[in-house]
Image (cartoon, rainbow, N blue to C red; front, side, top):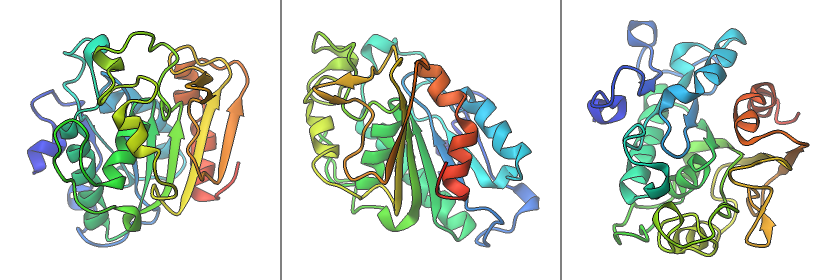
Length: 248
């Protein structure tokens, strides 16, 4: 399990978090631990800047976690879909971190990482394999944030194949998206979204909806003109405030 979470098969930058001898397992941490879930073809290290921001504002290494659920970019972005295996990795990661810190966790899902993390928390059957992930992990999550999340797909999905397929892809009305959007308020106690009118990858609107919305969310924060990466990386201060204060 440790190797699966660390993703040593990808390299030294495929995961982060944990305290070594600086944190006693199964004891609470000063801050509620936060798990950063990356997007399509990324690795955990993509969000080093967000992690560093949290670190400079009081979070310790054993309070900020990330792992790589894909293959680290080996699969072309055009063909990368939301496979059941990805949800199993993130689901296990949430359980491991919650157990290690004897605490509820916060989860931030970026881009495709938002629907992946939502399904990991939701549980139930995977639409691609039929495997049963188990019951929801809602009881383990305090705050969920979707940043530039592809919660209703991507406006770039014009043809239904590869990453835009109709089973576990980002196509409008895919079985995966219909599944995660069929219920509300399972992502955590608090649910926030951050997105932009200028998102050039997920888009501002998709499938006749605001692409990054989550039904039942506590609040959406809409930025004007930010591109996709800026929404994820340049709103670290807002992300931190939502986790620690519950508001902007």
